[in-house]
Amino acid sequence: MKLQTRKRIATLGVLSPPVLWALIFLFIPYLIMFTYSFYLKKFPTFEPAFQFGNYAQLVTDAQYYQVLFRTAKISIMVGLFSVLLGYPFAYFLVFKIKSDRVRAMLYMAVIVPLWVSYLLRAYTWKTILGSEGILNSFLVWSGILDAPTDIFLYNQFSMVVTLTYIYVPFIVMPAYASLEKIPRSLIEASKDLGVRPLRTFWSITLPLSSPGIAAGMTIAFCLTFGDFIAPALVGGPNGFMIANVLTSQFGAALNWPLGAALSIVTLLIVLTIISLSDTLQRSGKLELE
Amino acid sequence: MVTIDQSDNIAAGTRRPLMDRIAERSGSDFLITLAGCVLAFLYLPIAVLIIFSFNESRTLTLPLQGFTLDWYSKMFSNADLLAAIGNSLYVATFAVSLTLVIGIPAAFALDRLSFPGKTVFRRLILMPIALPGVITGISMLNLFRVVGFNLSLETVILGHATALLAVTVTQIYARLQRLPRSMEEASADLGASPIQTFFFVTLPNIKAAIVGTALICFTLSFDEIPVTFFLTGRDNTLPMYIWSTLRRGITPEINAVGTIIILVSVVLIVFSVWLLHEPKKD
Image 1: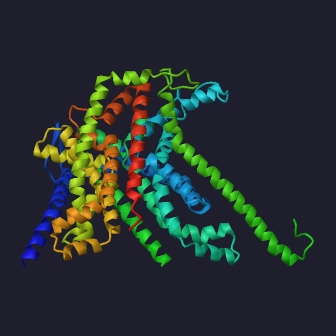
Image 2: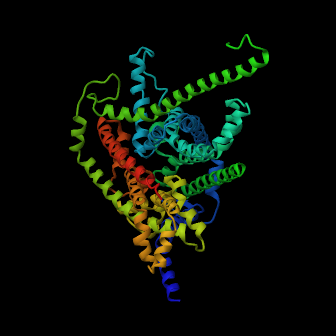
Image 3: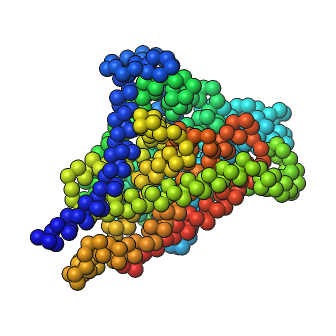
């Protein structure tokens, strides 16, 4: 009896700080945002209401749904290009590198940039791609171009390059983990049965590592979807993404209800993608068993 | 080619592996080239940043002009910049402490305890890792406005601690799962209270993971923009300072700051990754 009470007190002591924190700083803020999304804008602030006008505006006003589409497009492209670069790299590490030490070092070499200042890495692309930047001055200096061009920066191209650069490591990690888990015996069996390497890859390695690809692409997609640094630095006038619109709604445009509605929509899109990818990965795992 | 004089059957049987070998070889070459390109892609910008921090010219163009340490000395005499670095150190230190104090029990609860609403709790805590940082920032801004808090470095600390909670919980949880229960059970059998067990058995065993997580969180907080953007008052953190100067134009001074940040964070990160992956003995 006494032990039971002591245990219960200990449990409560462990549990209550994080639960309270999650309640105050996560649950209530999201709830407030959800409430705001039904409010009415009334200059300079807003007034309580219950109406769907903000959501309707997101669907009917071209300015908003176009940004949503553009953000989705860029996120998908970044996800794809990151996989095209990151997956072969992970494959190379798992199947082609014989030494464990070299493999660990190369893996580390990819992971380290992930944690190194995101802002600085994004900003460096601005200095590389700009019209007075390194790429241009190199092209002019080497005689390939007569004059600097401005086609590299402030468009969707520069945004996809910068974001792909940032999210490649996010693909390498899960792709590596899932490739490493594939039993070598399966690949050897396929080889022994006379199946070509490429076909072995298509019918064994690729399907079995697809959960890793899905996980990586989901991360790249979701993080790109909410990014506001890259668009602001290298995106230019046509490069605005959702996060930039959000920022302006809570700043200069001062339309908090609309911003809240857009936040909720973004939140729902991201959560849907995550749960879809979860289901996909789970069904992929079943195949393996 | 070697098998031309042999019968068709054998030729077919040997030609195929040869072609396969060629295919595999060229496949390997392709992979090596691609891996090299990926690494170059990842490190080129970092190299550019470091090289140009020592370049004499004000503009970031090729060819290089000459070696100088001016940008570094300029940086150390820039009062705003130094204040921003101080602010960032203050924010990162307290945010990391808070996130550990909250995150370790949270990870412990998720791993060892069963309680009603556990799934909701886990989803809620992990939300900031998946959601855009902007949304975490805005939703906390809403909260502070409702309760009437003035924005300051302290609100930034609360924001960072909340956003980093997801990272802390994932890392510590992963470590706890690898920790054998037997030691804790032994401790309980020997009459230690749950609290004694936690502080004298569990905590020392996950020490490396805690330090590793703290270092990662520190670098993340030191670099954080989206949450800070909404929650800061008049004071700037370092990334916010860099952000606002970037919008005005690029100066090599930023490259000097960047070089130092990158060097320090690479050291911290390599160290923390080593700490987080070290325990294989158990």
